[in-house]
Length: 240
Image 1: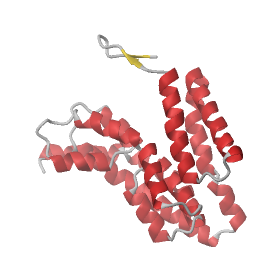
Image 2: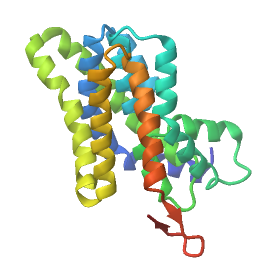
Image 3: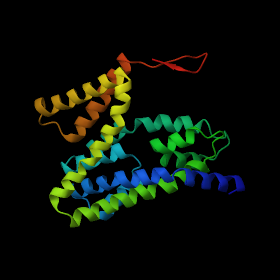
């Protein structure tokens, strides 16, 4: 490792400290839900360490808790995490063309929305920067999950049930601000909620995993068809 690599590793590590704090707080409720789904402290913590996607992990825990199949988990993870394929491709082309393939793979493995945001503004991008971000962020997510499982073991059930709802409050906090500013996002959210309710009432036999897959792909396809984002080739600016 060169001096530049060590410098970028430390920079990514420091820059991701706010991510560490956010992950620790949010993953606490993931641990509570994991315990309710029947996972042990080790299983939930190992899952958080290896599965670097909050939405995907929440969906997987829901499927596990409802007794879903491995196929449902697989399909749901593919549908939910397709965005990481695009993020990884974007960062890959910004690396040195001669960069080793194993470093590119590690960058893709440790990619989260927040680490992508931090890495995308680095010019030029050194692969050790997202490495450092991952080394800081993932312990926060893993430790928060572990603490959530342990707390769920000792706290009254009604209290842990109430705390588990904070995860959904977090998702609402993410979705509502942009929905208030953009009518297209608001309509997409409303359609998603309506479609989810329709599945619940009219297709009661549909498993949680298949519902995630169908809604993710279906609503995304509708949004892409009705609200396409066109790239302005000459300016590089996206126009709706």
